Image (cartoon, rainbow, N blue to C red; front, side):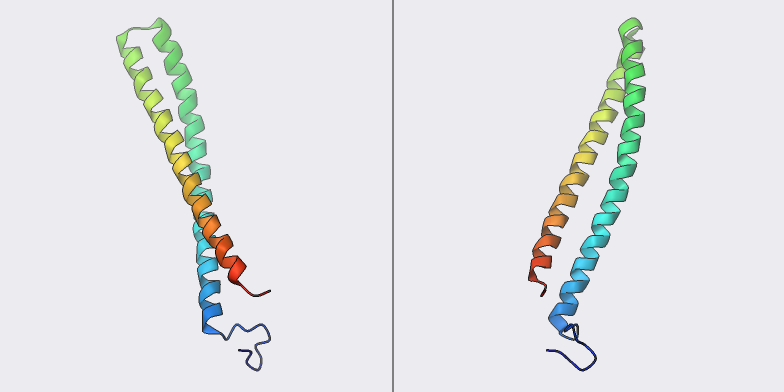
Length: 105
């Protein structure tokens, strides 16, 4: 239903709701992207630490090997976190794309 002064039909409650949902999804996707960038930077940091720890463990004692195991665990944890964020982002993007198809041209 087009109201006077509303040539695009935004007065329709279902369209308003649909637009709000799309905007909220965009905000969530943006927040996930920011978080993924932070996690990727931390992952890079932990990879460098892990490389050093693995080298130390190769020539060091049992404490160095223990620390190398701990740093390798940190790297795996950050990689999993990054994969989980990517999966959540993809799910939200698919949902947003489905909602976008419901919008009128």
